[in-house]
Image (cartoon, rainbow, N blue to C red; front, top):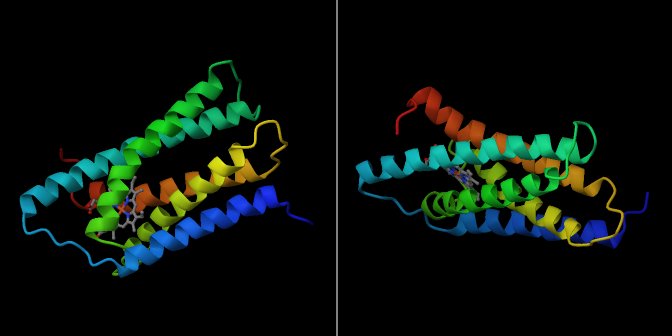
Length: 174
Ligand code: HEM
């Protein structure tokens, strides 16, 4: 099967972002904070932001299923899909910047390694999806649902390896 440039170019761009974030995460010297109290507050804030992102992604899944006719749809569905996606991106970026800057890509335990890989994967596949979407009027085939599915997997993986771990080991503190 011949894969056309309008599919593989966004895929290559996305892989480039994954690799760039991973290389930066490995090369960057982690920034250790001495203020443990402040760190715990930031950690808790990040955990709740990650949970909000995961919640918005659940709405993304339901609205995507409606767009593709699997669930009942309405004229508002695309708008809700777009705006929950934008909000999720907005909330995730400060969390990811803190992760990358403070810890980088780490592999201390399988959970931490999986979390770091899911984080890099998320922004790579997001770039792929946006590039696929930037071709109005063209038939986009399987690329967009596939990219959307990988975004969902990445966010579910990120949440499970960070917030869920936090809630089950430390608790649901504010
Ligand atoms: C860009 C790629 C990312 C990398 C390389 C990365 C890496 C890390 C690492 C190494 C940790 C410390 C894990 C530990 O020792 O327990 C961490 C913690 C965490 N990450 Fe990420 N992460 C990334 C993106 C994200 C994203 C997109 C989210 C959520 C939207 C997220 C949410 C969290 C949370 C909630 C924690 C626990 C709080 C903390 O320890 O500060 N990360 N991350």
